[in-house]
Image (cartoon, rainbow, N blue to C red; front, side):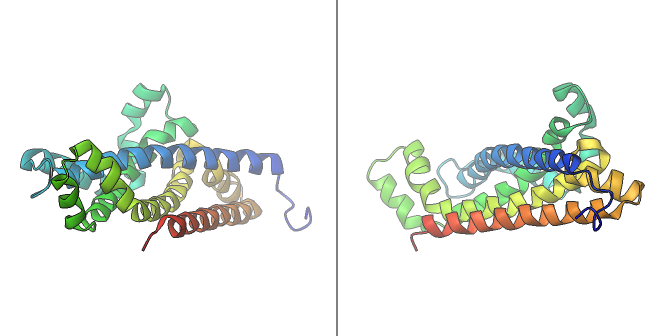
Length: 221
């Protein structure tokens, strides 16, 4: 192994892998929560739904569309002042989290909205006819009915976030992207680039497998 990968220091690879998993895990969890909140707001305030409100819907939709449209590498730079206020520094895994979450949550929110729109209106109307409260409809009807699509959506988003962590690594967030850039590119130790690429692919494949498995288990159709 040392002959094939002469420059590799495995403790650095291990540390970088943990950093990537940390950034991905925390940002996926936060994106799932925030994305569902934003998606529910988009759905519930849209025309003909439980909390129909054109103004709120327009504001939330504008926020989602704006942050969803900004390229991630630019978003990181734009959020540097906010990150410094929030985290206290602009380098490291924690400093990457605000940009990762703010970049991914609007993307996932649209997936949540689409998943909720695909629910049969008759199911919602039946729950309302039985006297169910709005909170009950949300927790017992909307989210359970949409859960397979929500899990599928967060799987796609998680894979995108792995790519985002690699980009964040280039500007000092750590992780496998930082490892590939500092050692593979700047020092021309290309075995680091190959190892980082293979590990990122493995992480993506595992996320996809787990997401597909969970979706198949909870899908009642």
